[in-house]
Length: 471
Ligand code: ATP
Ligand code: MG
Image (tube, rainbow, N blue to C red; front, side, top):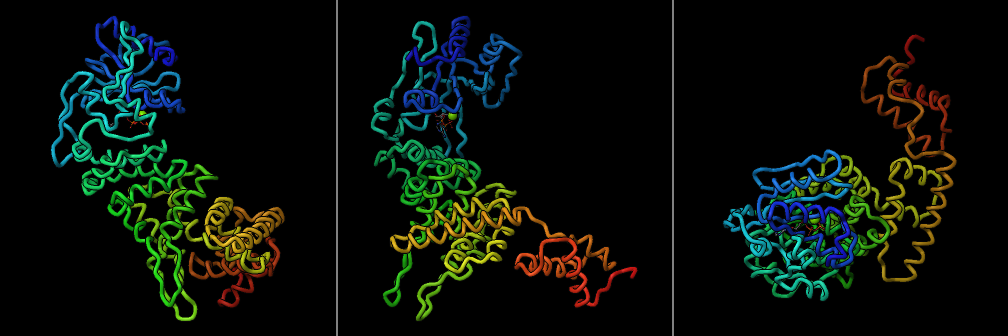
């Protein structure tokens, strides 16, 4: 392995280990990714048989520049940044668990103890950095063969591993999805048996892993595993409710669970954006709530986009996702997700396109991506028609955008102008007048200029019994 440790930091660590007469190893994700030839995220985990904090300080002293060491006494860990590499130091430890907490009792241990506490065989490999045995791979659980066979497996009894720290169940599925590995069958059965234990893990930690699953190349793989193991029902029941297709009078509807997964994969194929992927996950989330069978018509999901948008903050809060502009973005895309397709089904008028552009603003391109990804029909004629109409919408969007510049558009008359002109305080009338002006411009009834908008404002004011102040 020697030749693979090209980063000079490894030599420096080796040097310090020699001077201090302790042993040091690089372990975990870095070793795994090195053997996989996978792009490394510049995280290096170092285990020493001794104090990780003292060791980190000695390493920092040997590096050029004044490199600060961040350390956490309670955890016995220390971290430093070196040329963009995040290097973490910890003393080898032995862990034992209590039933109701994922926080272990920790004592000093050997490198074997430390490898025993690792989650998966492929994450338990270490490379020795000690001078005499520099570069030697220490692989007690044959992780290298699991890497070759693309298998996720725990080093010890999986029931114990998952029960001790249930977050490892999410991690198993996360690695299987990220690396496109399979989970060894008895290991997967243990996940299914221990799924209920996920409730002792904080939702923040669960969501961190969930988001990594969502950011994988083919996220549906992770959703299927979460579903089959029973974890999905516990962490995100609303998504499980999308499952199933009912048939009444010979008419069925699509299974929205698998439809949503197809949409998510479609979006993932064209964008890495986590929040666009969340919009795909949630776009039909209110379908179970709004589902109705109407005689003569068939299945309807009336207003599922409105109900769905309303569910977004609730779901974000439960999953401990950020309640910020990212959430607002997802809400907006869920609310608007039908609009481009409805538009495409009809005659595409300028005013409808203007309206869409006004409402979507800067998110119009993402909305179009989502809407395109939403076409999962198996009927080739239908798909062809959709795509043709869609291209018309795209063309129209482009034309109108160039002509009217409606992205981030604001009506020419502000609330302040309205209040000042009529000498009124902030009130409902201000909103009514402003909306009327916006409507008229979007509908193309008046041009988008201050003067015509001002005249319309006067007429609308009059209807409400308002007259220009000081005149
Ligand atoms: P990534 O590429 O996502 O960083 P990683 O394998 O480095 O993957 P980390 O969460 O950074 O994952 O953890 C570093 C190492 O610590 C892992 O490789 C594994 O050996 C160990 N580890 C992390 N979390 C756990 C856990 N919950 N239980 C046991 N071992 C763990
Ligand atoms: Mg890591």
